[in-house]
Amino acid sequence: MPNQNTPSTAKPPLSPKSRTGLSQRIKQWGKELGFADIGITDTDLSKYEADYFNWIGQNFHGEMEYMARHGTKRTRPNELEPGTQSIISARLNYLDLGSESAIEQLHNPEQAYISRYALGKDYHKLLRKRLQLLAEKIAEEVEDFHYRAFSDSAPVLERPLAQKAGLGFIGKNSLIIHPRAGSWFFLGELYTNLDLPVDAPFEKQGCGPCTACIQECPTQAILNNAVIDARRCISYLTIELKGSIPEELRPLMGNRIYGCDDCQLVCPWNKFTEDTEESAFKASNPLDKHQGNQLDNQSLLDLWQWDEATFLKTLEGSPIRRIGYAQWTRNLAVSLGNIEFSQSSIHSKELFRQIIIALQSKLNQINELVDEHILWAVEQLQSRLEGLAMDLEESELTRPGDFEFEQTVNPLIKEIKPFIVRKYYLPKQK
Image (cartoon, rainbow, N blue to C red; front, top):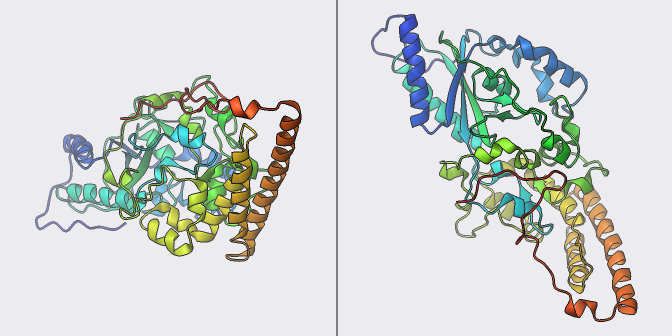
């Protein structure tokens, strides 16, 4: 375990009273550094070990071989960092309530939906740096302080640790949920050699009879026992899966090109979500201020026009950049192929043709994997286009003049309902 504490004067061992005082100061320092909450727990994860390896044994991790690579290091912190006694778990809010409405974007088939955590800068470095600052404050007071900071960057069972540290309960969607803060936050950890008093864990699972997340999941990836079959999860399909997206799942992805938030959008606890205080996570601060490419409000077709140089330049500092241009294009192709309209119209017909031409323009430009998804998307749109043509022809024969007087109702003016369940839960935008 790295030791970055180099005190000039020796300090006595901590007494029980001083350990309690240090714990309180750690939490105060965490708040001053911008963390929404800090909790402390021990290293005993034996309660969660069997479930974790059963999940691996059922191959629910798909192609994420790193989830199994480190054996028990993930469930036994002392194997990962010998000497670890106490673990400091921290949460950092990321939802930008000033961004374009997630719900409106999700229900507009021509718009690209990007998971809210990825609208701003990559959280890994920011969160790790913030944890480092917290560790430096501890090091100023503690002799021979050893620690290691983690931010989704090593074999750490972060959600069980957060539950044990009192930061929330593990919901049916497998996320940490706090009854007063929802689930829109990042987690980070400091493994330390300190012997600190632990916080009370969340013993009670707070979902009760609610199954909104299970019902609303587009691909039914959430199992009844709060286990995720990653092979069906849209976040996995768009981010972790490097190969071909299974054809039966492509239509279910809709316009989600990077990640998925449906299970959070319908969670009742998320009506208590607080706005992020981190400017780096604000979608209102464009990643490229000169071009103003704000990822909370982009059309699929506009993003399709990006070449690789634009992708790399615009998404510099974004977590999205790590999936690469080919995978980004693969995801976009699927979402373009999923565009549908509730009304037959000349506009729809022309737009389908426009999208098909745009899709075909990138054939044989990137790789065979992308071509496969482009051809699938073109086939979907051509089939839909044929259906539109038949509808228009039938309308001209049987209902002349209907389109001339037909009034289109903007669905965004009305309250937008989830695809399956009754209601979305988000605080009002500021």
